[in-house]
Image (tube, rainbow, N blue to C red; front, side, top):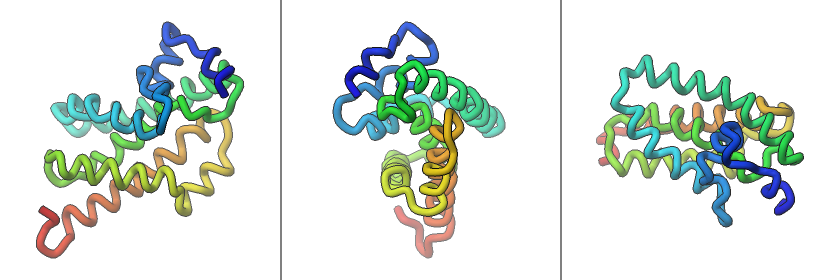
Length: 164
């Protein structure tokens, strides 16, 4: 796996984005590091109208399929741990559902997304095992983001007395 990392070139814009601006190169828990690194970008996106935010997420999914596929090819490893653009997008999807912009909800969203991404319950696991290429790298985290958003929405908007 170290040889695969040596094939990365952060001056290549695809590699830079695929590694979450280098956050995926963190030696321990690169997916977690990538999820944390997505939060400052999410904070900036919260100032945008929700329609623009949604368009950025959709564009990020589309471009992510290409840049993750290309980076995986260049590294010669499918879905190398340092490829974390999918975590960025999954976090942005999960955090779309928080009821208020509060650090506690961001933390809950982070935890829910990471648990889903690591545990990979059905249908996330099915997508992870059955879809290949750039779409395969992206889709399990997109689905984890959607499920995370659903959980956050249900807890945040339908919990009997509110969580906080």
